Amino acid sequence: MQISFSPQDHAFRRTAREWLLANVPRDRAPHSGRPARDFALAWLARCHAAGWSGISWPDEYGGRGLSQERLIIWYEEYARARAPSVLDCTFVALNHAGPTLIACGSDEQKAFHLPRILAGQSIWCQGFSEPGSGSDLASLGTNGRVEDDHLVVNGHKIWTSFADIADYQELLIRTEPGSKRHQGLSWVICDMKSEGITVRPIENMAGAVHFAEVFYDNVRIPLSNVVGDLHDGWRVAMNTLAFERKIAAIGLQLELSVKVEDLIDLASPPRGSSMADRLATLRAEAAAMRAMTYRTMLRDPATSSDGSLVRLCFAELAQRVHRAAMDILGPDALVEGSWTHDYLESYSETIAGGTAEIQRNIIAERILGLPRTRHP
Ligand SMILES: Cc1cc2nc3c(=O)[nH]c(=O)nc-3n(C[C@H](O)[C@H](O)[C@H](O)COP(=O)(O)OP(=O)(O)OC[C@H]3O[C@@H](n4cnc5c(N)ncnc54)[C@H](O)[C@@H]3O)c2cc1C
Image (cartoon, rainbow, N blue to C red; front, side, top):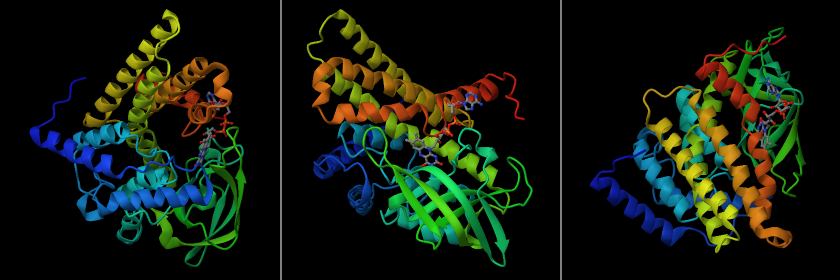
């Protein structure tokens, strides 16, 4: 796909490239805990101070209202500069909590939270999944009872990334007693310091502590923290998931494209023609994935299901890229740090944000028009 950039776009690219060259931290970001939080917030605050945070958000919410083309340029340069991964603990706030508030939040919610997100002053996490309610999100049971001007929340979430270091949570709960599935849910802003919240971190197979279980024991949340209308949380959550699968894709995918080039360097000279073929295929697949993402971003109107195409393509390619890295490194993978860590993490790509099977179901039903999955 050919995108045409104006002379002003090229000037913008040069400015971005120069700023990134002078400012990208040299240290590798810590994986988890307070060090990860401090590192990510300091980097975001630095971007913000120079006008590089939320560049496509509307001016009125602290962004620069720049076009999708400029956003593409920014992320191309960001990846090229090997800046800190966009998939850090600021990911939820910047890529789906903030955009959800812009789309569905009240004026007060936007005025309070959006400037803090962009300035690197708050970390958000996502409390959607529960034990037994991951793919089948509509079956969730954590509930909020309306009591005067508060919700009193009880229940249990799981796999909540960065819950241990987050300030706020996008929390999806059942607020209408007796309601079933998509009905009667609400999307609320939960202050993670509220009384009655217990966070129990979970270590993943890469040895990192990214996610946690979260328990709610009579947690009081003001009704003014409901985003959208009370009991209208499914609609709001679908906005969140569309942002998570689509907007978020661009930074991650460009990062992966740069990784493919790093992999080609790692393999040079490739041992045997089959590895050379494999690397050439990965480079072509990365280019195809980028073209699909750009097309999705620039298509007007885009559909909310487009995100599943780019998410699925990215997730499976990321696994193939890291598998190739292990084959190139061979026994050296045992002593090498970052490729091996990222290889172990890549297993989660086809689970997080909706599994590969669920993305395929969405593509089948909503894009290809095949019959819908029946729920009991
Ligand atoms: C790294 C990581 C970070 C995460 N972060 C968060 C977070 O911050 N917040 C949050 O809320 N959640 C988070 N999750 C949870 C994630 O959204 C769920 O793990 C995911 O939705 C799958 O749910 P589950 O684990 O309950 O698996 P299940 O839904 O039990 O699925 C088990 C298997 O059955 C398959 N399956 C289920 N239903 C169908 C179907 N209808 N058709 C075909 N196959 C099906 C699935 O594809 C999967 O292979 C994270 C997960 C990971 C791995």
